[in-house]
Amino acid sequence: MKILAIESSCDETAAAVVEDGRKVLSSVIASQVKEHIVYGGVVPEIASRMHAQAVSGVVKKAMDDSGLSYTDLDAIAVTYAPGLIGALLVGVNFAKGLSYSTGLPLVPVHHLRSHIAANYITSPELEPPFLCLVVSGGHSHIVAVNDYTDFTIIGRTRDDAAGECMDKSARAMGLDYPGGLNLDRISKSGDPKAFKFPHPKVDGSEYDFSFSGLKTAVVNTIHNAKQKGIEVSIPDLGASCIETVTDCLVNNSVKAAESFGFSKICLAGGVSANSRLRERMTEVCNEKGWQLYMPHLSLCGDNAAMVGAQGYYEFIKGNVAPLDLNAYATMPIDK
Image (cartoon, rainbow, N blue to C red; front, side, top):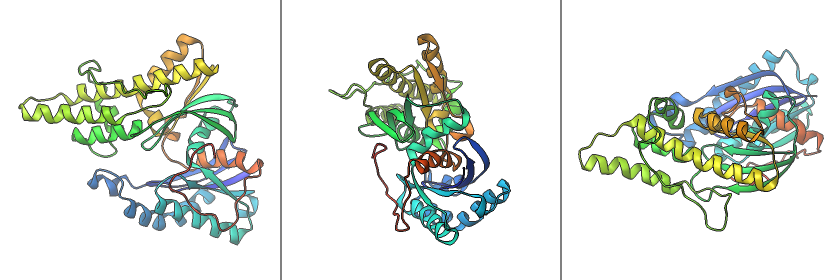
């Protein structure tokens, strides 16, 4: 079964053709990093306009690269939630137009489900059930993946997501957008024990996260040093920030896995590309004898291949949308 997938939830316009949820026949991504770097982050209006300019060409190239025609396809999958609403609408409306003109079924795909499905491409042998830590700029979840379309949220952030914390901390350190990526790079030469930061916990919710206090602590460290005329080592500060975020993510994931009896663990989302998080999760899973699955680095960020992977399972489950499908800025993964 071959599915054309379209992704436009943030600042990457992407299209891919995926076969049977595991094999990528083509994958094309048009990045907007150069356009947003001057602003230090994604500007939603600019993102939407650039999606509108790029989506037609990106989809055409994905089809050309696959060597297929629309008559060879079985369905069209598209990210419809969550994300920047204007950006999502570009992809959703383009996919609806294609569905109408080709007669192909339209499959709505949840963005976080797609990130989890990236692991099916990297590790074709992976099957549910498993526990997945989903971490990105806007989301931090511990999810029980009971089946391909059956999810239970065990833990989530109560305020800032892990990626948001690192992005904003990076900006305060004077690093360019994308902050998380540049923070990871510069922190490799730093001392993760140079600064002691709080490890926020949520009373009564042992699997939930809270990163806003940590972000504030990093910013205050920078401001206090400037007021005193003290030079702060950015590599040390960055490494300490990442180490603290990683501690919170790993510790809660381990507690959840032990409490709910999981020995098969996955990472997913943009922050799953962070080198320290991958290292720590590998160490912990090796110590406990657990199986660990992580998406290839090329599949950690937003892409359409992962949409096609999840779209396959949504389609065979019968999740097909009418042509009045709308986009949604927020939506729980377990809806």
